[in-house]
Image 1 (cartoon, one colour):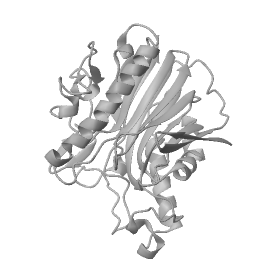
Image 2 (cartoon, rainbow, N blue to C red):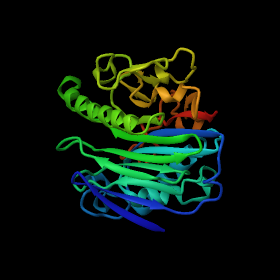
Image 3 (cartoon, one colour):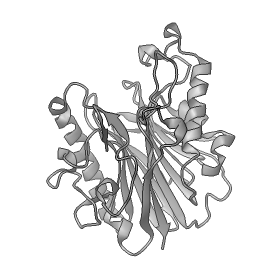
Length: 323
């Protein structure tokens, strides 16, 4: 396995590749998914883990492997597609991504390429895994104490594709008190997207990840925000399937909080996703199999005290077809 370490804006990243059958073929469909995995740590201590994921707190290799197995079971239920791009939030680092995708349970996805941030001051990282070869990757700093944005590019049969993997500031500490941090990160993502589109006319750009903001009323995604979204493909806006009443998606969100479903996880698609050439948006969905549900129909969140569960977030996906 070849590894390339890249230093960019005081942030580092691991880019890894391996060979996979069919990954270079001109496929007819592309599935892009994103999932907040709720603190998936391995059992090897490096001093940067949250305290509850250390051996002194009872964390172990067997518990880690159990979580990996459950995660693979979830991801292997993604819809059939020619190729896959997967954005992962809240993973410890490259080792976790590598062990996650190197399994017979995941073989149908063919995820042999990945990029992962390696922020030394952050316990959890952002990763992008793909069945398509990665043509380039960059880590963009957002601000002190804030998670960076991982930009990953692909040269495909349908033209250039760029994924901006994000994990915006959570609402812990208060929605209004953390709002500015989300706006800053969203602004950086918007600026990166504009540069990519200017340098690569016709390229498909997707902003993916846990945005920790509702697409209905969040300031970053509002018409005046840095990532204005819409339920249709409109010039100057990002397509958001949550807002598209023509797309039936159940349940009504990817995260259950305070008695209701929230659409915090998102995949925003640029106008090129419906321009009549290359990759064209076709459908979207949420992975919510029976083994992911509690008895009352909520996500089977990982419970560190009970040592069971999967994640408090559900994976979401969009599928594109090659015109």
